[in-house]
Amino acid sequence: MPFTDRRDAGRRLGARLVRWRGSDVVVLGLPRGGVPVAAEVARALGAPLDVLLVRKLGLPFQPELALGAIGEGGLRLVNPVLVGRFGISEAELAAVEAAERSELDRRAARFRSGRTRTPLAGRTAIVVDDGVATGSSARVAVAAARAAGAAWVVVAVPVGARQAVEALREDADDVVCLECPAAFTAVGQWYEDFTQTPDDEVARLLAGESGDQDLVTGDEEVTVFVGAVPLGGRLTVLERAAGIVVFAHGSGSGRYSPRARTAAERLHRAGIATLLVDLLTPSEESDRARVFAVELLASRLVEVTRWVRARTGLPVGYFGTGTGAAAALLAATDYRVEVAAVVARGGRPDLAAKRLGWVRTPTMLIAGAFDTGALELNRKARAQLRGEAHLAVVPGATHLFEEPGALEGAATLATDWFRSHLTPVTVDGG
Image 1 (cartoon, rainbow, N blue to C red):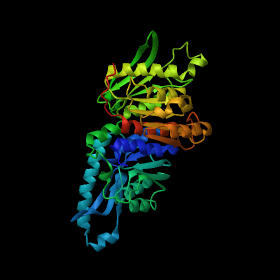
Image 2: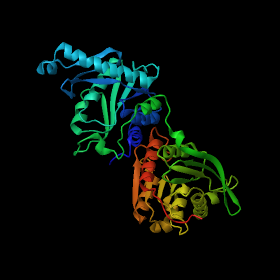
Image 3: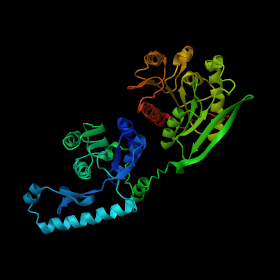
Image 4: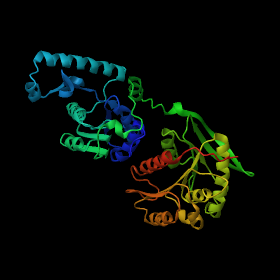
């Protein structure tokens, strides 16, 4: 499956690498295209981000063929067999090295802006690029990380040629590649947007400026009135948003839930606006009958949808959890609204059983592999849905997705679903 862009690839790669979250890790991006990917990986792991600067020493009359490489800290690797085979003199090699060393120093000054290199001694280094074609740059990067004292070196890429990826396993301690297509011709083939990464963007990412906040045009507490009932919400609107996702919370959750915020922040980074809304008032939340009154929750969700469509004009998706998942499925069948996509995470779709056969909205059900009861309920619900539907199982996860990486994995699945299905609609939301 092609990646939208390098950031999208980085988010997916970060979800695969969550087992290193919490360990002594440094994420190293290869400039320039590897740095946007690495920035998303570093964010997912909560790890420091740095750049790993290496330059190939190319054959004078065929620069793409590497005779060796140089790196920061005086690293110099030369293949004497190739030097001898092509009859390269010391003077010719020195000239190539001087030119590449000058470019390496220029990039170091431009990208780091006076910051020192992140120490690697005794740490795990995750070397990230936007893809692997021949693997020559990645192999040099592994050597550079080891020379800097890394105790364990991982190469992580979104896509790569199968032969190159297998060869890298001889150099690195671990290799993670999301896609190894048989029909591989070039890295850029697997990206919808593979425009060159400018130096300014590399410098900004390394300085810790993600740029996400530039997209936020409004982030405010709102009150949505359903009749005379005031429902509290948190509305985040983004510039050029692809759509907006309304969160329907289950029992014991709400708009301030850390789990909801984690999912919302992932959507924001993907260019999707959000409305986290409480479908019950504070006084109603203590009434168990109200908590499980999914038809009441659904009717309120419909009114919230009409309000947010009129407010933003954006296509709407639902993210439901717990009883909110059933409410989302019910609301998606209401003739007064048009819903582009539904995600139900760890939900109770069985509470919407009588209308599951009416659901035509593209729906993803997400369940934890170890939440056996909910998993069975979601399997049965999946069989009843009549539109496009998918059941995604998060490995190692229980009901609340509290295991390391489980919540992030579920958030990535949801984000990918909404990115694929949030498209403009023409229905009048008023």
